[in-house]
Image 1: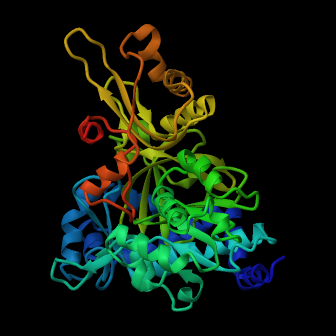
Image 2 (image 1 turned 60 degrees about the vertical axis):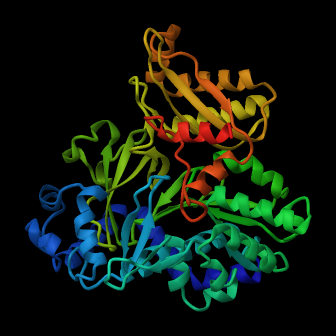
Image 3 (image 1 turned 90 degrees about the horizontal axis):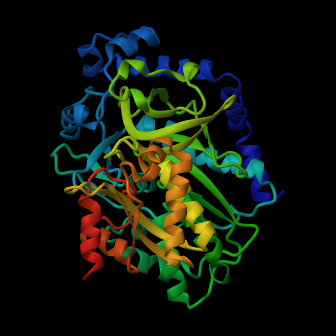
Length: 503
């Protein structure tokens, strides 16, 4: 065991026991979190509005407090941003994570309380280190410095003195001072608002540092890593950072980027660890790197509920952990120490284990294609893309898909706009395997595709290199937590991309 890992394992021994407890006694721990949360909530205007007390049952809480999304909570959040106290959480909230989820025009402002910083987001970061060090005792991933590609923050415009920005920037700004000793780049560089200027500064400063791990969103880190190679003139990242051995990632699926990272970091020692850390809270950690699911973290000041996606219009069908089932696609609902109550965050998950509770992210409640009753979700798309890449040797940089609507007697279909890092050996075969795999993983799609009954074969458009980057740049969505929408039920995004692709 490396010296660093020995120290970390000893330091986090008590914490590892706490994690083991919620593996064995999940409902006991969740009920403790519920009791703690409602004791805070009872002091807020929101709870008083719905007649919720500090000692109510889970069933009463579910009956009295509605399931909400951002639209329903926006008025209260705007009041909190303006400086009002005791609205959603006791006291005044100083930080708001600015998030759009995809590339939507309107931003969401998610409250980040001191409790959610300390007990949720920071605890999650520490647990990543504890779990990885315990499971990988010989790794030297923490012997050097960690490179983080964060966002930026600014003074809020609501007049209440609050700060808002990317969650990553809020975490960097509020992190304990000792973190700056093991993290790169400096806070001054990390918080540069202009993504391209930030990347240039990171290249200058960090190419000579001993970087042993890095963290962030796979897509934007891929941009950074390619810039590092361009700046140094090296062929792969191990020539820049010989001891690089861990990438902690989240935000988007890693599947489309896995092969590109293996090419950039050709090492059997390199580990990839997924986390589920959203603006609304830190929810799950990949505790076994040989599988693709994540352990649901149950003692972060979050109370979980799950609504079957097929019952999305019936929030009364939401269940707690005690009643979830494997193989069901759920919309996740959370009550948090950030002042969100029965809040539907927009992500969908599926349980892969109930002892302990493990999940994998399957998509978004609003990111799908269902123009013809086919119900394509992101998980379907990722599996189909992976199969098409395996069949043709392709490597995908980015993609999005949208319906092709019926005109006259013409049948509908889907259009896939794909930017490749390595082009497929046969474009037609890529499209055929994509189509075939979608039929294998989605029976609704298969029924619509049977003998071209409703849907014609998918159209594949190969994008020019850099098209997605230019699109995000035009929309001022470079870096941070901005994401390319994989699926859309209309053509707004794909038509913009097609236009850029022809320029």
